[in-house]
Length: 178
Image (cartoon, rainbow, N blue to C red; front, side, top):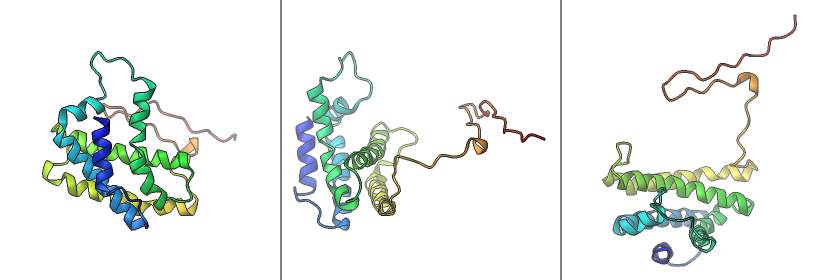
């Protein structure tokens, strides 16, 4: 099944590397659409690969986990054209994040969840998401790293609302000595 998905992703880009950032964005859109088509056309196999709740299955052996990770090369390769100066580990993190976003749209849509993007709009919304991410990548040229958000000082931190909508524990601001 991983081999079939790998083939579908490779076919989406005709096996050629992107030459420009625009090519890279086109590649990422094509890969995302191929992923959606694969999931729709091979629903049981796709669920077997990506269901987060394996039924009575042992942990994946290392070789199987490695096979899954190898699929990320389809996303990482175009990111090299978009993020040439980014360290490889950061680029992989971006690839995983982009995959997670597309996978979320696909998963929610296939499960007919109330929050899902409507089936008829999935292709267009996936393209919008991927192209928006690609347009946002210039932050890397400014040297800002995506995995290290700026920390807010503790004095300005706000309590996080809990699921019931109530504020979590209140934090007291430090009072100046008088």
